[in-house]
Length: 237
Image (cartoon, rainbow, N blue to C red):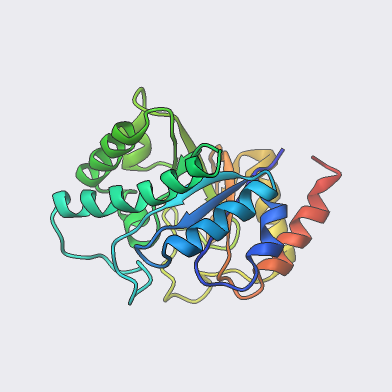
């Protein structure tokens, strides 16, 4: 069964339509977007739809939506990330459920592909908060490697983003980086979900096991894409 996840509570209009179609939600928690109220609303919506709840922390940079690297010390970054994660964790527990996972956002997520120091900081922080939490990680990444024998991970693929040959995401500024064609996305998802393969922007096919597949809620036609994927794959699953 393909398990979809979505980054939500980011100011989009379609959270209520996306939530019933996913297995995991990643809730923005004040770093790139959000506040106590948006977190509460998202958690309540997730509980209503029986969706596993994750925190989606980022660089504390609302202005750039967490998509630009910030020059800050590891200590200050860790402090900010902890505050963000605990906002979601405390809200979830107050409403009678448990936080399931952590998925870093934006520039931080991309850095954890290569940056061993930040990766070890992130792993240690997750263990400090709750060593039973799951960490969503990019494939073939520093954080995936660092987390082995430390905490549980789920390797994440992106349905609506193109990949380079090293399995990093193609920069959003490049042509073809963000995918919108639902048939193209469906074929890509089938490869990831059923064949353990990823096709790169240049057409190279690489072997890679993927545990969960993300659709970005701010992709222009995200609802249409996810509804199409859900209906197309439902019988096969």
